[in-house]
Length: 162
Image 1 (cartoon, rainbow, N blue to C red):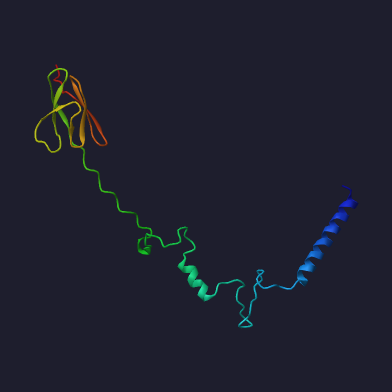
Image 2 (image 1 turned 90 degrees about the vertical axis):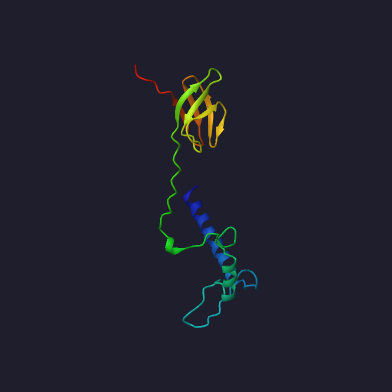
């Protein structure tokens, strides 16, 4: 594009914008087209255009505009707890101390276990048996696998050193 054509295009655009601005300024404001009429109560203090009136402010607060659900939070704000760390969780109950006392029989094996919660002394257990939260998963000729809620024990026979 030559510099002369560019200059003509810019002058044409400027003229069009001036014409549109002049026509918009001459058009009278029609009620309901979004124009806001502001009446000054005091010549030194003019209200902000479009600010809600007092009766409208109450309706805005009732509908809680800053929450998606449009109702108050179920958690009450307590400023005295601000910055206070939450209470620590109580410690988990200790795991039972299990011990394998002996293996009985031949296939299918049975085992003597000590330390089963709720039982005094040794208890004879079989594969698949449940004792409260403990379940006997496998018994071999020299070990037992016991599964708890969050722990699995592999108990072996104690051997005398020779």
